[in-house]
Image (cartoon, rainbow, N blue to C red; front, side, top):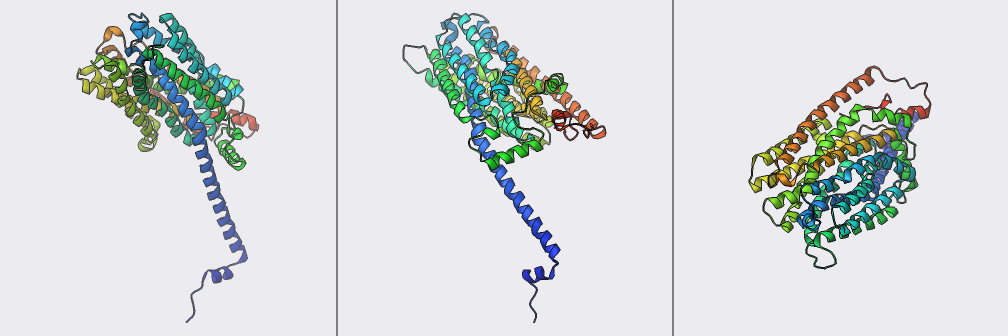
Length: 491
C-alpha cells in the first residue's frame, strides 16, 4: 500500500516559483507579527514612564485644588477673618491666570520641551501651595491663588498635547482617560490625608496650615523627580531602544502626527482657533467641570453642613472620589460599548441630570450622599470622554496644541463658574449650586448634538469633495492636518 504524500513530497511536487512565494509570504507574516509585538512592548514602556509620571502629577494637582475646601472645614475661614462670599472669591482667583496662561504655557512647552517646562511649573505650584500655609488673610490667599493659577495653567494642556505626540489616535482616548482618572484618585486620598494631617498637634502651624505645607512640599519634590523621568518625545527617551524609537516614529507618521519636534504652524493655528467643532466639544468639558469641582472643592463643605464633623466630612469625600474613579475608568470603554463618543456623552449627561435632580429634591442625608456619588461618577466620566473626543480629532501638532489648550481652558472656565455657585448664604441645602449642575447637564446634551452634526457634515464633505494634494510638497501635506483627504473625524 502506497503511503500518503507528506510535506516533503508536496514541496517536491510543487513548482520552485510557488515554493518561493509561499516562503516569502510566511516570512513577511512572521516579521509583521514580531514588529507588532515589539511595538506593543514599546507602548507599554511609554505607559510605564511618560504616562505614569503624568498621572502622578495630576493626582497632586487634584489634591492641591481640593485642599482649599478641606481647609475651610478645618477652620481656615474663621482663622483668616473671611466673611460672606470671601471664600468663593479666593477659590475663583486661581482661574483668571489659569485661563490666560494656558495657550502661552503650551507654546513654552514646545519651545523648552516637556522635561524642563512641566517639571518647572510643578515645582513652582508646589512652592506656592507651601506659601499658603503662611497666608494670614483674604488678600494673602488671593495673591497666592493668582500665582497658583499661572503655574498650573500649563500642566493639563501640556500633558494632553504630550499624549497626542506619543500615542496614535486610536490609543489617545484610553490614555487621556487614565490621565484624568488621577483627578478622582486625588479626591479619594486627599480627604483622608487631610483628615489625618488635622491630627498633627505641632504648634508651629494650625491644622489647615499643615495641609497646605505638607501637600505643597510633596508636589515640589515630585516636580524635581519629573525632570529625571520625562522625555520630550520618543527619539529622546532614555528607556526605549533604537529599534523601538524607529517603530514609534513610523507608527506616528502613519497617524499624520510627525514627531513632537515639528514646529507649530501659525497660519493653521488661527484656523483651528476659529473652529466651532473645538468649542462645541470643549463646552462638554466646561459642563463636566461643574460636577468635578463640586466634588473636589465643595464636597467636604456640603457634607459638613449635613451635620457631620469636620474630620468626618473630610474623610467622607473619599466615597464620591471612589465613584468618580470608577466612572472615569469605565469611560474608556463607553465609545466601544455605545459605538460612538456622542452616545457616550449623552449617557453621562443623563447621570449628571439625575444626580442634580435628587440633590434638589430631598433633604435625606443618605440620598444626598448617594447623589453626590452619582454626580462624581458622571462628571469624572465626562472628563474622560470629552477630552478624548477632542484629542481624537487632532490631525497634527498645531491642532493638538490649540485643541488641548482651548479644551482645558473651557474646563477651567467651568471651574471658575463653580467657585461661586456654592455660597454660604445657601447653606445647608445649596439649591442654587445643585441647580447650576442640573443646567450644566442639560447644556452638555445640546453641545454633544452640535458636535456630532458638525462631524457628520465634514466627513460627508471629505467623501464627496476631497482636497487634491498631488501638487503639494510633503511639508504642505503635513500642514493640512485635519484637512488631509485621508483624515476622518471621530463621532
